[in-house]
Length: 191
Image (cartoon, rainbow, N blue to C red):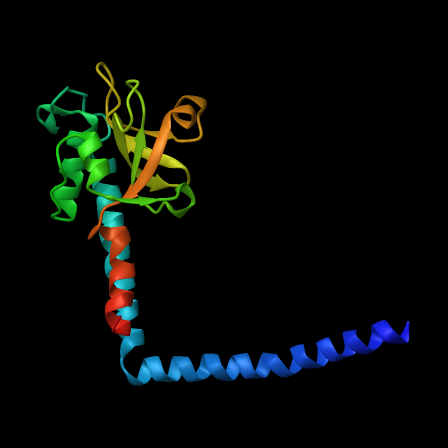
C-alpha cells in the first residue's frame, strides 16, 4: 500500500507546483499582448466578425418567404439555392461567390461539420449529384435556403432525416465572416 501512496503523493505535489507556474505563464502572455496592443485589436476583430456574421444571418432571415425560382438571384424575381447564397454574401460581405452550388463548393474551404459557424455554407446532394444544393448555416443545427419550385426561402433543421441523409459537407468562405478571426490572429502573430 505504501508503494502506491508515494507516487500518488509525488504526482499531487507536482500538480500543485505546476498550477502556479501555468498561471505565471498565462499572466506573462497576457501582459505581453497588452503591451503590444494586441488584446484591443483582437477584441475589435472579434466584434467586427460577430457583427458581419450577424448581418449575414439577419439579412438572410429578412428574405424568408421569397419564392423559389430556378436561375433566380434577386428578391424581386425569386431565388434558387445558389442565387440566394450568392446574393446574401454579395449584399452583406461584398464577396461575390460563383453562381452554381458545385462551383461555390469548389471555391470555398472544406471544414468539418463540428466546425460550423453561422455564415458557413452547407451542401447537400438533392439531385443525385454532389453539391447540388446549398444553404447558409445559421447556428444550432439549422440552415436557411431556397429549397425548390413551389417553396419559399425558409429555415430548416439539418438533423431532420431528409437533410441528414443528403448532407455533402460544410465549407467556409475564405475572407467571409467566419474566416476573419483566423486571418486576424495569424496577422497579429506575424506568421
